[in-house]
Amino acid sequence: MVRVTSSPRLVLVMGSLSLVLGASGARAADDLAGGDLATRWKVNEDDPRAGLPSIEERSQDPLEFAYLLQDLVARGERAFIRRDWKAAIK
Image (tube, rainbow, N blue to C red):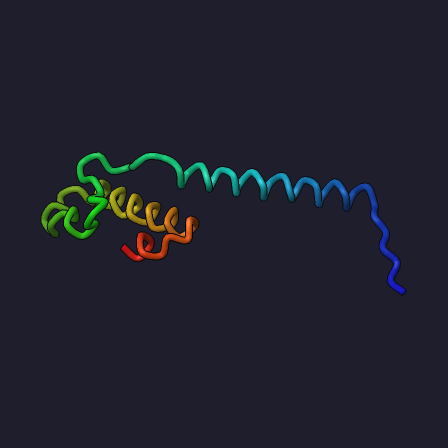
């Protein structure tokens, strides 16, 4: 027979851990629900590839292009969470 004991210290550590993990998960969900980061190029909802800038444009503003990529990834993640596989692939 296994005897389970709970010390106040263990309970405190486990409770703190669950609070931290819960808060980080909520923050990640909030990040996914936020608006776009990119201001120069917007994601074309119907055809995301159509809105991609040329290589020259990307090279002129790499930070803005990184924001666009983050916007595309966020849309894919939201679709994946909704189990909208067609939108996630797009």
